[in-house]
Length: 175
Image (spheres, rainbow, N blue to C red):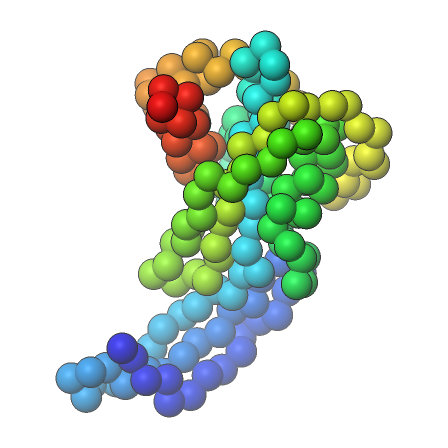
């Protein structure tokens, strides 16, 4: 366990905050921890009755490239993760789940960030008319589950949450 002796907020933004903590280690030494505060997020593996998976193709500025990802989004303050999943699925691909099941949660990068990501499996999908976010350009598409799983295993999907969701769902579908 590390004992925080001081905290300095460096940046407060729309999506993240950045702080630096001075900490005392168990051996008595002092160190600094640069911490990205994040409210958490959800990712939704939405599978149709025909076994197709909804994806979005989206440009990601931090890595300067487009990625193929499952729908996902940031939690609003004090927002229930399941409610966020329903909202994001509607906004990004225009679908509403009849059944929504949390299949995992994990910390995306606990060495420096507090983000906790919840992964949901959405089925029994119905179209819903929801306004699209104005600050994102997304290309929604559907890919057969087996093809998407093969893409993940071949290294053609580079997004961590999407890889985790596909591989977990493959195990669930076998059970």
